Length: 457
Ligand code: HEM
Image 1 (tube, protein in one colour):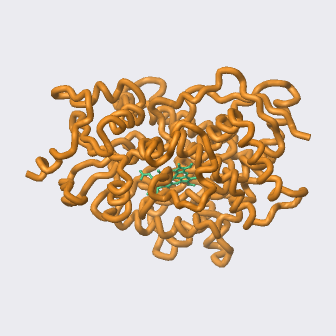
Image 2 (cartoon, rainbow, N blue to C red; image 1 turned 30 degrees about the vertical axis):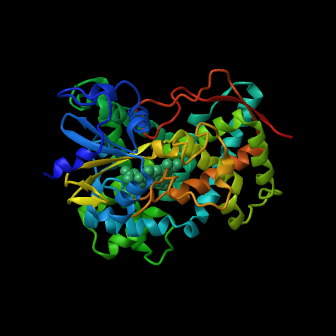
Image 3 (cartoon, rainbow, N blue to C red; image 1 turned 180 degrees about the vertical axis):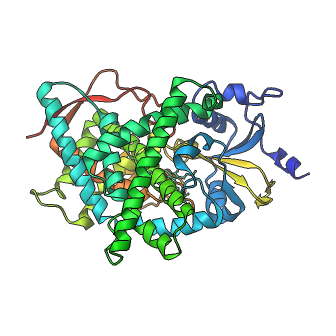
């Protein structure tokens, strides 16, 4: 009976008997295919694949209902994240219920914008180190792979914020362990059998995971010992904050595993996303020299002389912020999130039976011309007016499960982008393109984005 209530919602096109929309969905990037369907039949459509049926929506009111107003009626759908569970464990991104609530409270404190002064300092140090690499490229005339450099930089910053890890250790250890893990996990989302086949990629994956776990456990145990020797020491990073909250309540083997899962989650969620945002923004700005000049003019009012600018000014960097937000709208590095109803729910006349999965389509919302005129144009001005955009701009979503790293990531990226723009001229290498990766989330460029750099006078 309740299922029939969904009949008022149109099916997405190209539905076949038995397999439903599976074949059509695999014909391109799933978020691009579903965006087209929403454009044709939206703002909400039904989608079926073997074993699951979804409501797919870009309706801002319905989205707010699911992620904010009636958030208690929904949980995360971990099906799509299954391949990442080894990397994320039961960290904040994947946990639910009491465990999530407790950990969110601890970590939300560490991620408040007021608490991020050390992230600003780490970001300045990281962009200055990147400067040395760019200078070497400028001298040799070799182009820079912007995505690779941004990944290295964002790993250094998150590794320092979570673990006080020195940059050379971050460079030596993290890319080597993370890259095979992330690459293989992304493949397993679409080819789950890869997890069971005895092939070299599986052995490399298992080895990297075991090494990452051992590395983090070593860090946790050493730090716990140090804290117990000096319990009054001020917390220096997120690892300290987690240890303080857990050690107060009694340390168990589960605590060790939990802290390790949170660290893995932060390192994973905190670098590829920010680096994709920075890469796309720089790419867009090199196509729009006038906007790049506006960014420089705004940045020059903050970066004066050699000293560290005032933290209040760094937090603003308004034009850099507008460029980053516009890149998030245009390139949609996290294009969808999925929720599952845990009770029967209603939204207006629509009844959503328990078990229904709701695919929240931020990309379709961000590309809808009714909300964003000329949606394919890169126009940072959209984010400089007084009109709030909260209901139509949701790259970090909203509500209790919104991105805990939102302020972290925008602060870090504003600093990096504005300082780089002031110090360097960028000339894209022919062949850079807007084409996005077809299957990986966060969605980065399909090929590499390469640029010649020249220090500015
Ligand atoms: C441009 C950068 C980023 C984007 C677009 C982004 C986007 C998102 C989105 C859409 C979610 C919701 C996922 C879902 O509900 O399934 C999320 C959650 C999360 N993000 Fe981010 N993120 C970014 C950067 C970061 C950074 C820098 C960190 C950590 C330092 C981080 C940590 C997390 C965590 C831990 C969650 C789970 C929160 C919870 O469920 O309570 N993110 N992010």
